[in-house]
Amino acid sequence: VDRDGAEKLRHESKRVSNETEATTNKTQSEVTKKLNERVQDIHFWKFELEREIGDVISETDLLLAQKKRLENALRATEVPLHIATDNLNCRQR
Image (cartoon, rainbow, N blue to C red):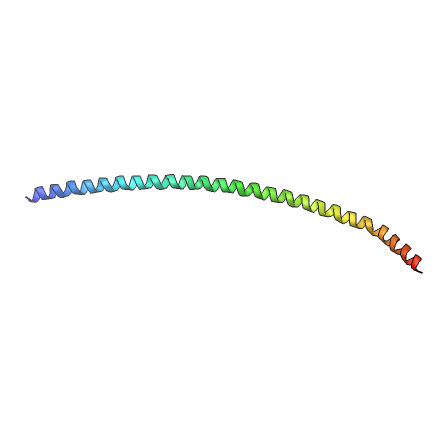
């Protein structure tokens, strides 16, 4: 009777062990799949962010070049403005 009880307990333990192993393998497989999907998402968004950063840098460079052109144009108008102001002052005198 004790041997039969021990045998039943051993079989039950083996069954529970197999079920636990199967559940663990299934869960691990699902988690691995989800992690791989997450890694792919992260790579995609990293690529998108790097592309956007490059676009922003390019746009900033263009804006800086335009700013320099405008500053040069402003400096180029200083002499004619000074001459025009001087002429107006002479006329007022």
